[in-house]
Amino acid sequence: MSEQIKELVGKLYDGLAKADVEAIVALFDPSVEIETPPSLPWSKGSYSGIEGAVAYFTSALEYLEETGFSVDEVRVDGEWAAAIGDWTGRFRASGGEFDVRFVHFWLFRDGKVVKGSGISDTVGIVRAYAPDSVPAVG
Image 1: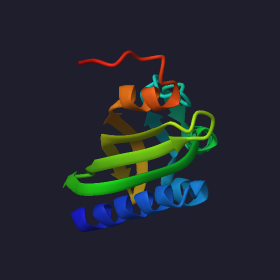
Image 2 (image 1 turned 180 degrees about the vertical axis):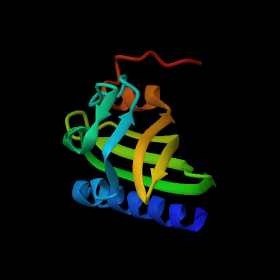
Image 3 (image 1 turned 90 degrees about the horizontal axis):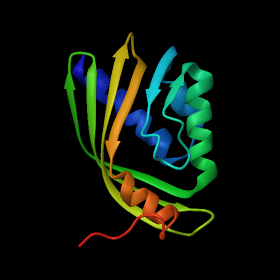
Image 4 (image 1 turned 45 degrees about the horizontal axis):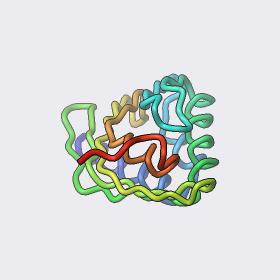
């Protein structure tokens, strides 16, 4: 089971690397629930179903001229997977770039994603989007 889930996670990030929303949502159950930080410029926080997932990823791609994920590690426990790595991107409007760490959590049932959520350096992303909106620390 864990190898199958790792393979599905690999397909998910292949779809993300290609900005292929159809390939991404093909891995999702119709009842999928996506939770994202609402501080991301394109995010409203919670998304339900395939329609919601399409809305989330389409919105992100409207904001981002380039995006990439480098997955360092995938840990599987039962039907849960955690993907750990680096997320890079460049905003269309500002040209601002980010390179942040992420941990994404994926719950699978019957070979499909039923829940997705994650943790990332949203401050780094917001700084790239609107450099004057978040003061530097240090």
